[in-house]
Image 1 (cartoon, one colour):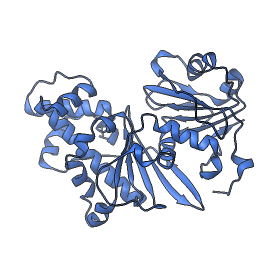
Image 2 (cartoon, helix red, strand yellow):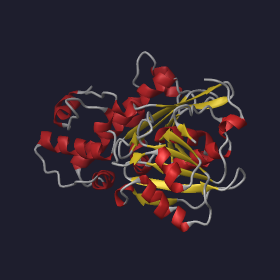
Image 3 (cartoon, rainbow, N blue to C red):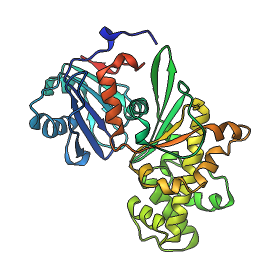
Image 4 (cartoon, rainbow, N blue to C red):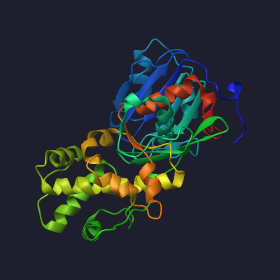
Length: 340
């Protein structure tokens, strides 16, 4: 990556920042380099036909501040002038947004790049530790978050920059290990013949596992939403839901451990999103950490790696705001992802 400086990376204030997921989109405006972002506006993506409509209605029509630039994080790969979100019908068209919304400069990142930036931007007061030792200050880190899908990003420090590494790691294969897994996994809904991490480690994935457990044991499965399954499991009122959440947490530990090895994450592994925040008691129960560390021949190494749940409700916006204020601190590659 070529070295950049402020003249290469800076954006004109005010800067619109947006975290666009499969279900919700969150927007705010950063007025200048010294100011906090404005009160965030959160909308459901299903309520608007396009992202342009959402920005116009939820932000521009309600604010006296007119943004000159935008930094948007979207749930999907950024690889063309028309960016299709993975779990949302919106198509982000930056050139069209420049023409329609009065913006002169737009940077589009992957949503988990923003989550990775948040790891640097947020303090310990926004973290809940799930075992492990002390983080090494400039060591690699990884962020993953089960939500509408399963987002993954790495974060490495090099050449005096924190460099987020975006990807689609949520679509890696995941398979059974224990005898019980081999009973349950054949009943988990597949995607084109395979089980990816996202078929288990997201909201609908938790429901998939719950139904699979019920099917194996010939028991009813009355719950239809992740919230219902989680509530019943944490309350201890439904054995099927309890096993489903335990399986979910174990698989999350396995996947987090795999990614920690990929990025040699001595700086920490960070779980983000609403699901992780809601299941902290289950994550602390023991099977998450056991699955995370069960990586022979590197189990001793894994025991030293700290895991955190990011508890800030709008972590990605915090990461985007930090980048918007001073992009030269971060090694974010904007080639092919910046329009002006």
